[in-house]
Length: 110
Length: 114
Image (cartoon, rainbow over all chains, first blue to last red; front, side, top):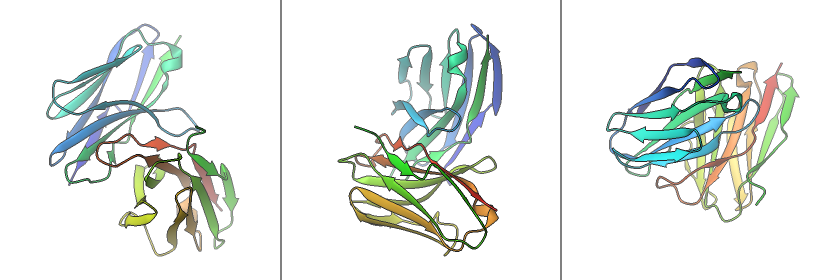
């Protein structure tokens, strides 16, 4: 069974304090790994797709990396507006639907 | 494009009542997904459609839940009769293709069953 585990469940950072969120996955043939951001009361918003181990993508203060077993979302010098829940999802081979982790709730304090 | 549109945004109903949630996907997208999100279980896929045809409804919790997609621009998720444990946020998402393609989510419908 395909599984996605995100850690930590919650993370509290001071503004400017860099850190990383983890997404560990078990799938039978990864087709893609997705990162989404979700603000309170809103739907998940797409951030990145990673397709193969070693791939990296960046957007502003965020950088996503991928290995064969996990993905990291690195947040450099975060700002309060980066506060949100970050969701990871994977798609296995064979055109299976996305499987989501439960997310990491990030709070950045000014 | 306006993105995925869902209505209503909030719904409060009493146990036993019928609830209908509505979704308009992004124009041109051929896949539509219905999800349910709770604190305990996170985001769960209920059902998805390809070109208006239901492909996989194995995530639908019970026969009380049903979904339809009469055309490419409209889908409904119906709960009849509703129960308090159905309280959750229901999201609709759409994508162009499903092979590692990005899904775009609507704002969700927050359902409270009393």
